[in-house]
Amino acid sequence: MTLAVLISTIIALIFSTICCSWINNIQNNKWLSLSIAFIVNMFILCTAAIIFYITDVQQFHKQPDGIFQSLGILVFPFCIPIVTLINFFILDIKRYRR
Image 1: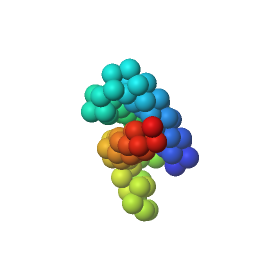
Image 2 (image 1 turned 45 degrees about the vertical axis):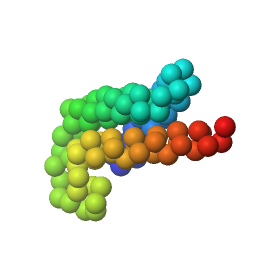
Image 3 (image 1 turned 90 degrees about the vertical axis):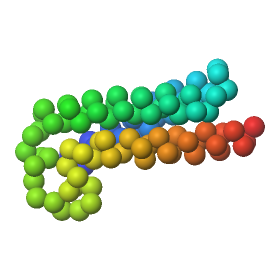
């Protein structure tokens, strides 16, 4: 299940980065593109949390092992601001390379 959580987070990062870069190229507004990236991250990761909760309820109600395993189902909402922050840094790097 940990691999599935990691893959879901990476997919959210890829899709939000693509949307973020696309909006930034069209509008040239960094905060609008970060807002769109936050909404995309929120939608993908909350949907993944609901799907994983429905498919495997017992996995997320076990005893705590480590920092991310002890979060259980809350690992997805916990990753939303982290992935958005990574998008922020990607936009800054992209802007300074131009």
